[in-house]
Length: 330
Image (tube, rainbow, N blue to C red; front, side):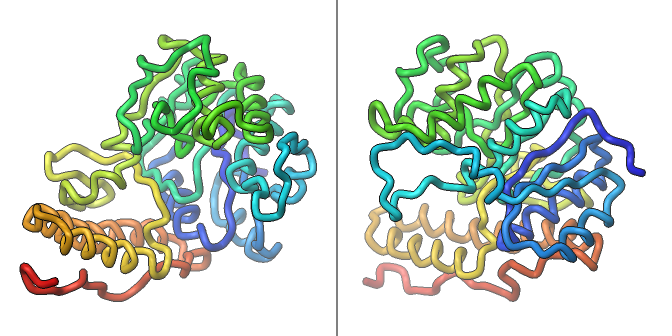
């Protein structure tokens, strides 16, 4: 019988996200984080789930996304099939609410399945237990937590006004109502702009239930990172990875390993370079992206393959080269 932890990761996943899930689970086992895993899942067979669960010393509990979605009340006016609620954006919050209502853990870490986390996280769980919300910074804005309008959640209605990102969030058991609001806000009509978007809902709920003193930012340059890939080069040192300023990276976000994703990004970059006056700078960025892609994949493969029986094969393999073209060509 495995000992139950006071803490848990909460994630929503299908096998297409498996490279991120398995890598993170192996990393947390390797670095000795004391936390169970609660997984909202789709498309994993019972055999696959059992194999993963039996591979780790911590408890791994699985809940079907379809089961969680039965608790959702869609209050939006627009219920057309092409505007369906995003079950993955809701899935991890629905599971978080479930385990919080059951008073199962003292603190949880809600992460996205394409967030790869590779340091020991015990200290963050203990911080969350005291009532501090630790959230990764949103990489597509430069808003800091201190700039959020605490107590005035309706002043946040657009992602450009967001400081927190739902890729990594450590939350104590005392914030059950906040998690409930994150779900409800996504299931109602927006009062303005994109106020019911998942990231906006998170920031609105933090403004409603938190305070400047109660939120700890997990810095975007070391926790989210994908926006910085063109500007630095990552270097592996054993089971750690550093940027070119020799700052250790803690995690990164985005499903960059998806088959065809990188070549598509590079094709877009090539078009930007061809139409830009700053060709040299953009070409340097593209060179960094190519270097980082192979370095980061090598680093992530190291964790993914720690337990061969459950290693994910759902990622781009082989040597990829950035698009070649002559300087000044049209």
